[in-house]
Image (cartoon, rainbow, N blue to C red; front, top):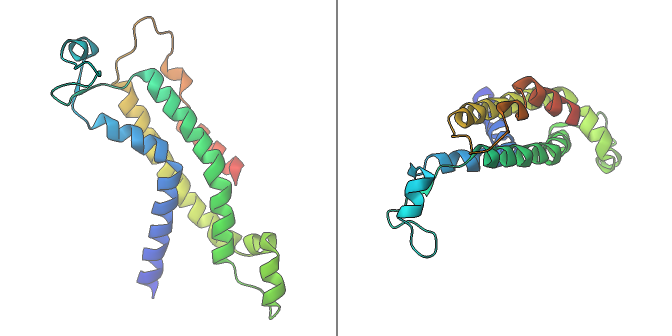
Length: 168
């Protein structure tokens, strides 16, 4: 039974971390595509802007900043919902008045808060790990010409942790 519980917890952690990091994961997938520099891109494109050889231009740092904004918005949406759902599924009514306890969702969330907090801690770390990988990948992206944006516009991992904690 312990093994099954561990697998179930791992599945929950993976599911919620994936939901929170979806914008980052989508961006990271674009980095796996065949790339070339933008000058070559213009020389070998068809009339619709698509390349004959299937290669795409490397994403820009400003595109990465946009992804980070989407990531923050996803956290603001997903983290409170994670806490609510986990609390509903992981809490148990303290007495035989199960029917009345089920009607009060807030008390259900609070009743399972120990387990919820443990799972949210693991989800938070998976989320931060994905963000750190994103930041490292962005370091290798070429800066746009005439761009004044710098890496200081990206959040530090500790800021992501603080944001995560503040949301739950």
